[in-house]
Amino acid sequence: MSGRAGETPDRAPGLTLVSSRGKSFRFDPGALCLELLTTGGPGAFARWEVLHEPADLILWAGRSRLPDGLDLTVSVEELERARALRDALFPLAADRAHGRPPRAAHLDVVNEAAAGPPLVARLEPDGSRAWAPGATGTHLLATVARDAIDLFTGPYAHRVRECGAHNCSLLFVDTSRPGRRRWCAMEHCGNREKARAHRARQEL
Image (cartoon, rainbow, N blue to C red; front, side, top):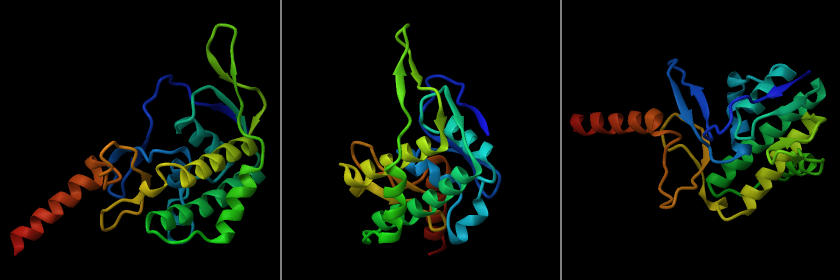
């Protein structure tokens, strides 16, 4: 399966998600690897699975924070590896958010994916940026896995967090200057939790 991932230039980072109540909201997890976690996950999160066929991974890449214009080919095997990488990244990020040590099995999946060749950017004669031809799912997964390694070993590793809402498990990295981000999105969980706290105070 092949296709072009992304068509709109200069997009703001972040994804448009739809809540269980059908309301759309903008969520910026702050890192490419954490964007992959919005496609489903292990265990109870499998009900949110959206990566059913290779075209779905191409669609995700086009909506991600990767620059536009990626002409990507994804095989069924690469799709399965993408789900495996995501299902390892999910607990790794959650463990990081809650101060738990990483588990070796999850690290092995990320390191194996990162060992492959990543996506390659190129400079065009007109000075524009483009992707080198022949991009595959393997290149995409290596890029995502290397992004995870950079995140978990970088200056914002201690700012990987889980949304503070009582029933939201979205993970993000807080790259704001004050470092006080608590919610996946203020328009979604932030406002909802503030209203919930207000009701609780009134009932006292």
